[in-house]
Length: 161
Image (cartoon, rainbow, N blue to C red; front, side, top):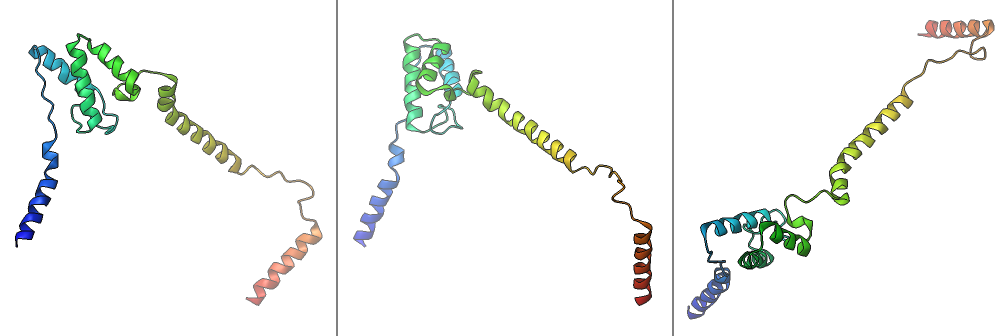
């Protein structure tokens, strides 16, 4: 019985390790500075989570990025300078609105070009399959003897049935 208590206590301690995680607490000089911090952390994307902002993410890298945003704000950096710092460090992906570059243009135009190319292929294939009016040449017509033979075969098959 004593062993069971010891094991359950140990399991409880191990499962509560996440409760020991640090919570970001920063002191701001003004309400405006706190609002600026909140806006910046909502506008920057977590490189690990990808769908969350660094404000919403519990990833270690998001915590580091929040700390860096706070430090840069304390040094007097503007929102644009902080965003440029993060982009230089983590790439354009860190912003929810990446700038228009050759790489992003391909990503935006690629699906449209793919649909356009598909439409061209479908139209081209449809035109090839369209039956053209057959031209009747003299070699394709039946002679009188062949016509009589055909009629005879058709009549014979009708009598058998």
